[in-house]
Amino acid sequence: MAEKQTEEKKSALPSKSNFSEWYNELLLIGEIMDVRYPVKGLYVWFPFGFDVRKRTYAIIRELLDKDHQEALFPLLIPETEFMKEAEHIKGFENEVYWVTHGGKNELDVKLAMRPTSETAIYPMYKVWVRSHADLPIKIYQIVNTFRYETKHTRPLIRLREITSFKEAHTVHATWGEAAEQVKEATRIYQEFYRRLAIPTIVSKRPDWDKFPGADYTMAVDTLMPDSKTLQIGTAHHLGSNFAKTFDIKYEDLNGEQVYAHQTCYGISERSIAALISIHGDGKGLVFPPEVAPVQVVVIPIIFGNSEDIIKACSDVAEVLKKDGIRVALDTSDERPGAKYYRWEMKGVPVRVEIGPRDLKNNVVTIVRRDNGNKETAPLANIVEEVRKRFEAVHESLLEKASISLKERIINCDTLEEVKERITTGIARIAWCGERECGLAMEEAVGAGILGVPEGDMGKGAGKCPVCGRETESMAIMAKTY
RNA sequence: GGGGUUGUAGGGUAGCCUGGUCCAUCCUACAGCGUUCGGGACGCUGUGACCUGAGUUCAAAUCUCAGCAACCCCA
Image (tube, rainbow, N blue to C red; front, side, top):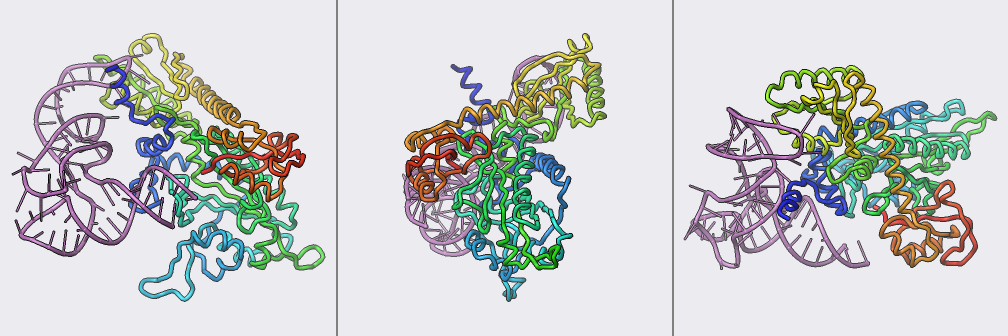
């Protein structure tokens, strides 16, 4: 009993089953974000967390740069532009921060701090788009945006300053081409999340939940440990709604002036919230090797004379570094156990230990962060052995998360069942697709319809629980962030 | 949107009702020295705080008001 108490006392993190507390503590102890900045909804990236962000966003950039261009538009948007698109205004006006003064002078035209950048970018697209030969345009930027959230704010999830908003804005000749681009966007996002070992569900948002000003919205969701879903990516088909209000026209092959068709799609630091929450455990962070700031930590196990051991460790560290692996060599004056806990908290995927026993046998001890497996491997093959484990860690993280997601998607026949099931995961139920039925379902259950998922998950025979009509489409419902 | 609770060192707490007796305390914090080191070592010596502003008072961590921030509950 006394032993157990000591153990509890020593564990720095609350249990993950108490997700909210676990998450907040982990952000701080794991040095991802400092939540103590004295403005509601604004948080500070620690250098370590920012490193994770950098590596995560390098993946998005890599994927987008294949056929997008990165640009940068201003933070401030004149009220006159911001107020052009009626639906868009309705969607955002309660959340906009306004700049009203320059020094002591009141501005003639107030400036909105972008809550999203359509109205900053599209006046320029009006100027840039001239002919069909200019199309398509595929531009993205990674910026901060501001939303005056009135609900409970949460680091990385619901922020007043979104610090890491990746938004792409494309222009196309036809509605169909734009629709293709929306599909492409969701493909890119799924690939991005596969690289982060995060399983996702893509679905079409119900009409009442689409982006203000869009024809339709496709969304990428994942399931968090507390059984709420987190929207971690969206792609919007804007039709020519914005083209009309911003007068974005091109001359087609027949010499006619035609309105362009547009899409926009975004990802934010919610991707990192998902990364941390889905893989992390009671010992702290767990990162897929690709985004881990430190990929390998080398720990010398010292007895008495330490020189040989230290030398062997720093040799190993050098060899790994030469191969492009991010290595930390921990020679600090602490006992090995304390070091293990520290680096486990930081999510380092692979740990290499060298002690007298290893040295004698020309081997190293290799430990995986994700499952704790401890093995010995020949010193001569160290790079290969480490690389092999990187792959294994990534695969098993993705597999584990995918299974956990699948297990928590439950088929339901009645709304009572849905209501019960959404406390532990996602409920799948027939829906005729009608607005009135959908809203009634949400009302009855007290949770949202995410939409009709792509692929088999969205198909199946059943009766709409509200109107009773036969339908072949299945919706998913869940508590959401 | 409505209601409630709270703010004391890097973290956790006591003190607040009844103003002074406070040099408060603990730690997984920090610094130095020494002994240690195959899963959170130990000893010694140190460091460090009353959210911000105004008010009441001889005197404020403590009382009053305002602000800022955090948490919880309800819609």
